[in-house]
Length: 207
Image 1 (tube, rainbow, N blue to C red):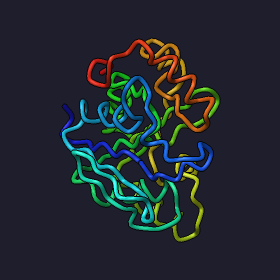
Image 2: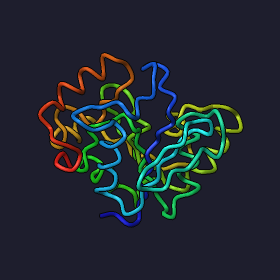
Image 3: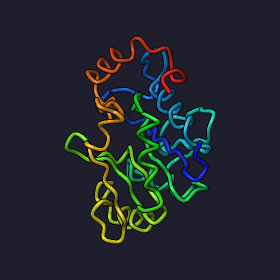
């Protein structure tokens, strides 16, 4: 159990591409929110859930925070998590990722003493909502919010930050199929995930 990293689950609730609130979609007998929350709670002593300012209230057995800034998407969630976390680092994940793998997260968190930002580059793209961020990212995040540049990926190129990109080759021995990075954006994604989880009894056994 990591005490020096806070798990931050982004659960904004917009779900525009899905056409409804995907946090409560059932897969394998549990909601997407329950799957991702269980993974973070198995790893981190402190876990926070961040939702949008205009999101419906959300009940969870961990603190639920509303975005400190409005309309900045995942970047706003990251900002809120970094501001409110009691630790120097946060691991940020999205609530629509039912295959979050504790082994992958531990591997990424292992670089926290040598980097301000640890992000996976998998499937020819960066994964900013499956990444570790240190407090030294805060001033850059604030600059981006003020300028309304809300793509978290921009942090990777900032010269003031020590960045560690985790390659697909590094992750292959831990997660050969890359399931950790599967998320549910569309109905077709939901169908795929439901098939993969059909034989799984629940979050606790999956972790």
